[in-house]
Length: 255
Image (cartoon, rainbow, N blue to C red):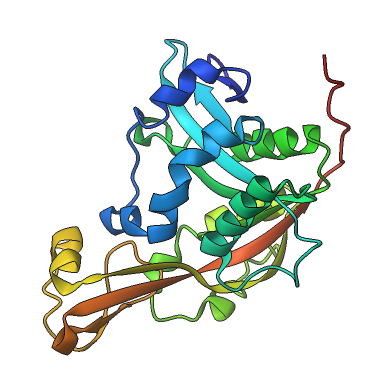
């Protein structure tokens, strides 16, 4: 893409302190996953070779993508509590010195000013390349389908079965992953869990949260379960595990 530079954060560490300067379009409630709040800010500084960044001609950050290495071979497959669990695994492996044999994407975020221009596809390719350069054969991704929020009552297993006439997923973000070589593996049924008081959920969404039952929240992939009688609500978001098989490359020799 013209006038856009994409590298890893390892190649441009000066951008680490600006990683959140870029505006994004994530819904407010997504900022309150306890696992993300505990670990996410540490991902790019700890694993800069696995995280990619894009800047425009003026040097402004316009996209970021973070992935994290972990050891899947030591575990019994991909976790049902996808995004949350893989982050915990990765930092536990890093702390214990366990060698990774795969990586997991965590996010690809595009500045609103640059959405709809094909940049997400380019960032995914850059992330695949970055992981491959570290010598790992597989990039997994707990994908958050971009149009699932339009069908909040449809089970994710049914949603991912919705295909176009050409056999590709109806969902645009899943379709980008499949076109890039990704294979849909399974549903991570409890990928992210966001609990909060009903007062917090009212603040995050502007909705009343004053009755027991499911609440459809804009941009949420499934309804939020509200227990107004006890003053709390919980959002359990399903994601879709996608596997990208990479041509593993040997990392450059140490100097």
